[in-house]
Structure formats: C-alpha cells, structure tokens
Image (cartoon, rainbow, N blue to C red; front, side):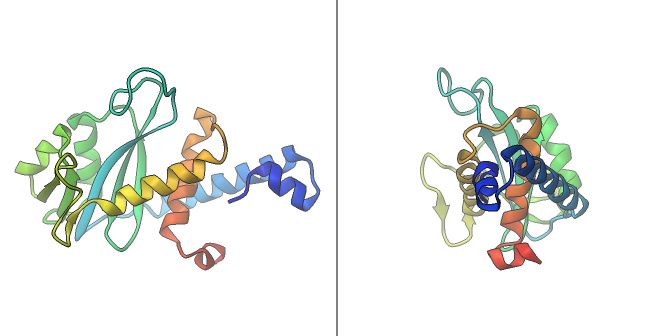
Length: 187
C-alpha cells in the first residue's frame, strides 16, 4: 500500500528499482485476478464509476478525460471490474450476460443502460439515488459503492496514474478488496 518512493526509502534502494518491482507485482496480481474471473450468481450489484481526468468543466457521467470502469459485485464475496469505452447498453449488456448467471438477483441504480435488464432473464431491482440509497435491508448497491470509494482512496495517494498503467492499479484494488482482511493478502 505504500508508494514506490516510500518503499525505496525504507529498503534503501533507488526509487526506480522500487517502481520496477511494484510494477512487476501489479502485473502478477492483474494476471492472477483475470485468471480467476468469476461467474456470478445469487445477489449481484452492478455499477459504473469514473476515475481520473480533469476536474474542470462537466462532471459525472460524460466528463471529459475520465476512465470509465464497470463493476460487478457478488454480495459478501468478490468484485470484478472492467475498463469500458462507454456506458451504453450495447457495451454493458454482453458483459453482464457473460458474467452473471440467469435468474440471479441484480441490483443497479436508475441509469438508463440497465433498462435492458427489466426484460431479461435476471430479477432486476433498481435503486433511485435521488430519493434514497437503501430500500429495506437488501435493496441497495452499497457494496459496489464501497469498492469504488476504497479504490479511489487508494489510488489518490499516487497523485496521478499513467493511463497505460491504470488497469494494473485497478486490478490491485480489486485484489485487495477480494482478499481482505490484510492477513489474507500475504497468503
């Protein structure tokens, strides 16, 4: 969880050496996470989030210069993320169909791209964020929102991540989330 510069100071090596080792570790983590790509069933939360980019101008959906990440979370279990070019129905639907077993309970926000799930083989429940974040004890997407919060907080410490390295940092966040608590990461 430390930056390469902090780790280099602790160990007594050049920061470029630490950066190289951290990069290699992230490549191994990304490879391992992709090899374990889950096929979800049961209660699944779906959401998209926007990372990076400029703060000026338009914010939220459609903000310029942001990386769009789509995430699936099985409640009480693992998360899976994917960098997507856009959040259109034609982009998200194939990912959902390949990753989620039919007859699963799928929870989303009110975004229009999820309309296709209303007439699909999934049991679709929507959360209207403008009214409330939770309806009852089970109708929410707080799990995936929690992951987005943790990932952004972790990446913020690096003060900018090159776009070509972003997937490695994202997969590291996914790995940290899937194998929490911290004692499990070392195994």
